[in-house]
Image (cartoon, rainbow over all chains, first blue to last red; front, side, top):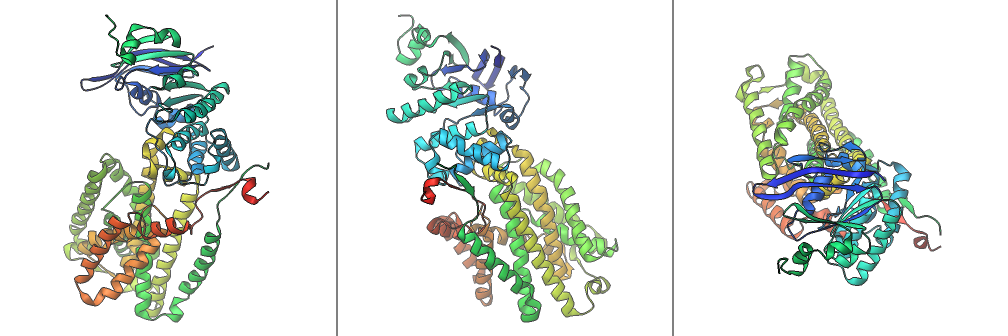
Length: 242
Length: 339
């Protein structure tokens, strides 16, 4: 299988703070990749670089065989990259259905009844149908997280970026959300998922990369990666040299 | 189970449409039932309503909080005078041409001031308006700093009699308000309008969903500036006299307009309509009290901003779940219908 996303030599810094330091990796079409790392390691910045919200200082990003390094965020969404935000960014004055419709009409480029039908489909898939006519500003945290997912899926992405979508949820809520994400992945969508809730991440992803201070410090099979000293140090506070 | 259906009209919006049509017929017939002073006032109300709808689209939806739209009101007024006096155009043709010229002028201004964010943007728009005022004050052919009057010949080209002119000027104001409200409504109802509404609520999420924010804002800025210039032309066609201070007044053409939109409900279509009615109700009742009138306006604005940031329409909408313009989508599932 070919790489749908190919990142090479990506660098980005804000003055002294380096958020991407020669980041290089490929994501295969249909894969689910996990991204781990401590707070401030540059995980969300990596998403911002992939979606075009940030411009890299150096390096290139290719998506579906095309160099998209200079493309705008809006163009990248139309090309097939959609994301959920760590802190939900609902269109608060619009209904849940209208939120999804924005993704369907603007991102996926659908029109009229076709767009409305697709928006209904993603609301059913993400379990938000009972809230379709509710103003998004009035939703609970779980519902906001689901809305992030629904809106991204409404844009019909080939590559879906999930930014700590399970954070802050109860275990029961988390299980339901994982089911939805598994279904989306089984439908052929490539996923990159940043998550601190490891048990959620590890039932979905097939491979993980670990980032710290913008550097990739480990990459590979999730179970093996969790056993490496670097990751143990980050997540369990165990001194790697001990 | 049948598939969910999506509709937009509500009972309130159907009732509102009927009421609006009746009101429109009554307003169109005003020259036959209203006195001269009342008609002048109604004409002024309709022009303020148009300015408020335009400013609301730009600031309330596109997030372009300009305090310099008087630049385009004055530009439209001066173009009416210049194109009729020196270009020999009919006043109505001159006003339409003023809209086109304002659209062209607004593009380089936008590329300049769109680099500024938030408060800096607001101040930038004000500076641009001052540049307009000072520039037009230099044009001695248009009366320089003291301004000029519309020549009698041009005024008479509108209609021979005074009552005919006043009726025409009123109908132009009514027509402009209908065109502006319909245009804003149809735009917001379209898919581009959906994109603009998304920008209103979250720019970062909107750009991530494929919406070109800069282009959408530019389109809104150019179109509102063009319409604002047309309204400016109509305002000074009523006044028949123009001067730089009157044409580019920040109080008359921006502060009052912001007051109207904010107390009515910013970022909604209904807000500017309610705000305009409230503003003129206050102005007409307090007209005899002099400066107290401005102090009361200020007090009302402060109370509304503190107690009801979404304006009077925001209060009504939240309380009764009303929508007069059918912009929202309602999803009905089979169970809702009782099946």
